[in-house]
Image 1 (cartoon, rainbow, N blue to C red):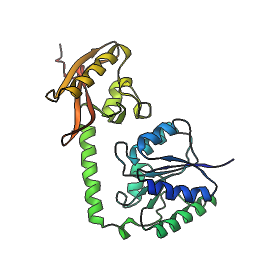
Image 2 (cartoon, rainbow, N blue to C red):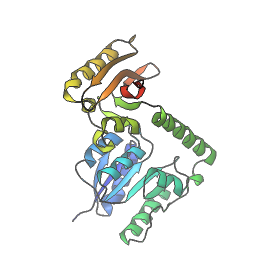
Image 3 (spheres, rainbow, N blue to C red):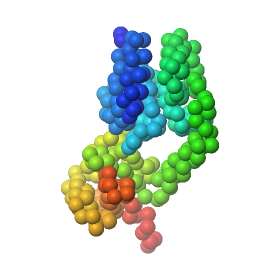
Image 4 (cartoon, one colour):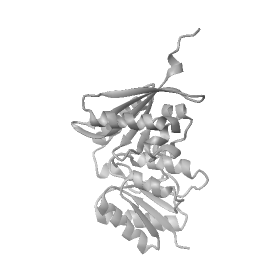
Length: 266
């Protein structure tokens, strides 16, 4: 049976570059040019090998890997992180959940490293957390460390803010969610990521959510819209606002506040 690989990278050149190497090795290759597309395709079933670029807009490589691990807990196919900036050592590799790492670099060098990796993989002679090349040879460590620190700082805010947070893109699909948000809705990350925003709330509340999204999108002076959800399972305040970068609206932010958390004891 033909082995199947997936290559995920928003750089079309690198997708084609890796696809060419893999096809010459007998793989059938699924191409994905962003994290959201890869998740939608992985929902169709596992692959034999997954290459994931770490730096992608909206849904990044770390989220793709987290989704894959949770979607296929019993199927441990190799996941290869590809990056030129975000991995320094095996601890970074372990933190994102990948098995292997190949640094982006000059094409001749990268071709050699990918081929070497596939040779070892075919012989079952490669261990998890093997780094094929050191990123320090291609990028300054200080710049890399500062970038990692900045991302970790932002991630810490996102997870620690005390609200359930959901980031929604222009297509009204969920592209990021924090742990508290999942806990509030009793949902798992793999069931929510890259799903339509209306999957957040039960059917009776979907119309209200859609109306709130439209209202803040159409009225620039409307900073946010909120409404309460009260049912047997949920007691939440839902706060909807536009997600902007500069003057450009790129989607929505939805915050969930647990109403019961702030009630005074009787």
